[in-house]
Amino acid sequence: MNSAQGAYSSDISVMRLLWSQLRPHQWTKNLLIFAALLFTFEQINVHNVLITIAGYILYCLVSSCVYILNDFIDRETDRNHPIKRYRPMASGKLNPGLALTFGVLLLIGSLVTAAAMRPLFGLLLFFYFLMNLFYSLWLKHIVIIDIMIIAAGFVLRAIGGAIMIEVSFTPWFLLCTLLLSLFLAIGKRRHELLLLEQDKDTHREVLKHYSLALLDQMNGIVTTATIMSYSLFTFTSGRTIHLMWTIPFVIFGIFRYLYLIHIEKKGGAPDRVLFEDKPILFTVLLYGASVVTIVSVFE
Image (cartoon, rainbow, N blue to C red; front, side, top):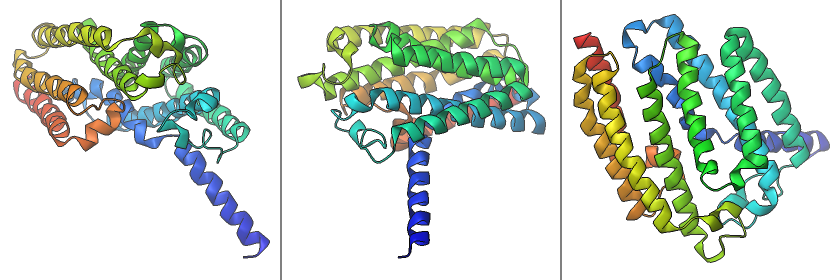
């Protein structure tokens, strides 16, 4: 292999590492931006679909900048984690300085594009990144606050979808999103605690403030509140009352996830669970189809 071929191969390797560093497998979390479009089915048109897709892409890029920042800050402690030690920076395969520079350029480009499309959406993305910056530097070490910040990120995704298509959102919708996000965040912390129970102080400092009993009690409260809030949302959101027929899908999805957390010992990566667990994936698809059908037929 000559020097030109070697340099080309090296460039390809770096590009692959940078792509991996973006964590595209976690972009499923940003699908929540389509929720506003789903619940305003009558306003679906080519323009709203395209601008929501653009918003989704921008959210994915900014969230990837957050992942770069997190991995840059946590690269030393990630080396003690049985899974995270294989990440590009933690493994030593990707130069941290190069990754951080790439992240800064990507962030600036994404924020400028978002502001040009929807100034308020650009501001929301900037706030999302700023919130995660404080999370990475400080807030992730504060018990309970760390979970609430994770949940707040999902709420901002839902708000972002509404901003992109310029529709209003109800408090019930945001409350349901917040509670469901708390449910997933608590499950994630529980999985981390189980995984690192023997040496939980070496990776995530905040884990020493949690116990399985505390997290299980918190999950019980959030689960109950989620089901009640969603049920009230279907009756009081101003949409058709027939949305009540989607309540069983929500209950089954939550119960199934609790089964995966307690019996299968999963929950560390909700984005993977969505695609790997067929009952949950099937339930989500049925739920989405039901909402579209109900809104289109009864409104």
